[in-house]
Image (cartoon, rainbow, N blue to C red):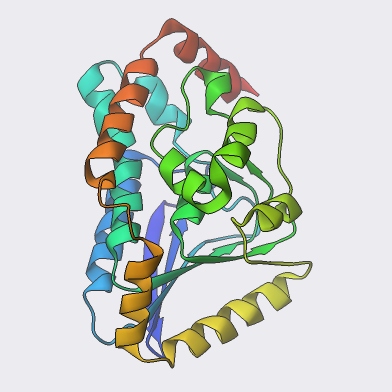
Length: 251
């Protein structure tokens, strides 16, 4: 039950899986490890496509580690923690390989950001999504550019302001965060495999050029996401956020 990130490679496809016993949430160390893994895998000429998934049949990703958020005691620590999500999203954005997301369950906060940073997402109907950050005194500032890029500012605003409400997988599919939704885990996994194998059979140079097209106009994220991390890093120190995090943890 130890947190882990593992990569398996077959047929020019790298499957990167992450696990954490607390709903597949992310502490700083695991965010750093995922960033490194994406950067490393992206350099391999033997790999044409990446699949990003989490382990288990429960949540896809519960977002930031509440335990670690509660321990943030100064601006430097806050900036460092939220920069972890900025690092992952920028690594996914700049990775020369197309990234296919596989979502088997709910995604909250940073988990929604990870899915938004994928180039194509296949999901189970259980994969509801929520941006709950305002409810704990912060906001989805780091992941907002990725979410807005996928679903638009209006839908992003609805998710953010309705901070306690889940949006269904069907809603996510309608808005463009998900590309396909399935009622069966077996069908989801079969389709992830078939789709990634099909993509991996295409001209790698064409895939690379397509990746560049998909992320045109995001070069400023190299600074923007860290400016956003500083906002979250400041807000997480507030008494409001400390109390809200403690209450959420008790639930």
